[in-house]
Length: 140
Image (cartoon, rainbow, N blue to C red):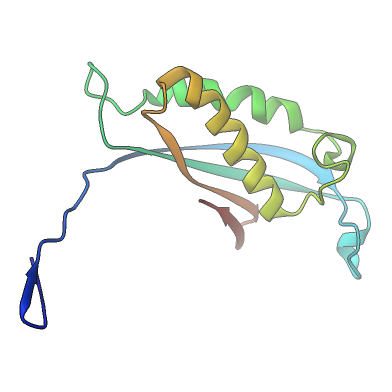
């Protein structure tokens, strides 16, 4: 409870569970409308971290089995692994920046989860490592 002026307010907390998995992939890209080295084709050994969240567990006491989440990520990773991102939708129009790649993983993972879990589980956030010391995160 929190005291606000003369009134006592109850702050309700929602229980949330989170699970996280990571995967690696290598891809090439170049940035449009950018001045500098990154406007030229080059590649990265990326890492992606996807964290799911939900307030209820399944009948086995799991938010989502790690194995199942890895299975969900596999086709997303395989689609872009060892590819030139600029040649693949949505990156033929959308710049393949780390920020946009993070959103791509967020959207694609959420799309699959919606059908599998009837909305019980959602993506909390998605982080892309472009190098060991640079990351971009997307969340809603």
